[in-house]
Image 1: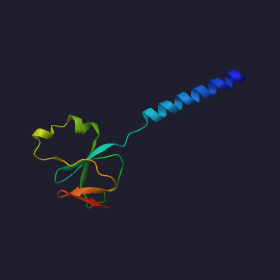
Image 2: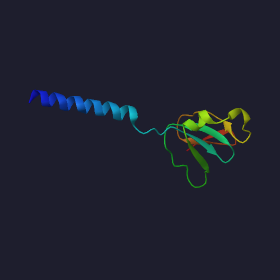
Image 3: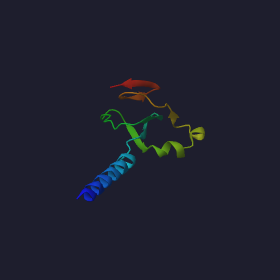
Image 4: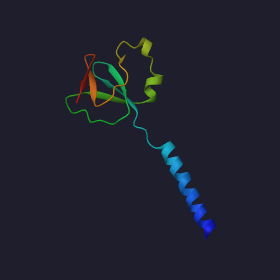
Amino acid sequence: MHRFKATIVTVALAIGALVAMGGPSFARVVCNDAGDCWHTDRSYHYGSGIHVHLYPDTWYFHHDWDHDSDHHWRGHREGRGYWRNGVWVTF
């Protein structure tokens, strides 16, 4: 019986570790219609008047920022908000 409990605990710890490491990531790149792009680690509802495009976080690394005149990297900002005309707007 002791061995059975030890096995259950070991399996539970292993599953917990896998879930912690392999859980879904909400990190993404958000770009507005003006081409301002930023990184966010939360999923926000931007509302119908704010037009944004969501990309997976890996899009940043595969994007050619040096030769893209339509997108401008604004970086990560804390809190809820979005970029508009080069200015961070909180909501």
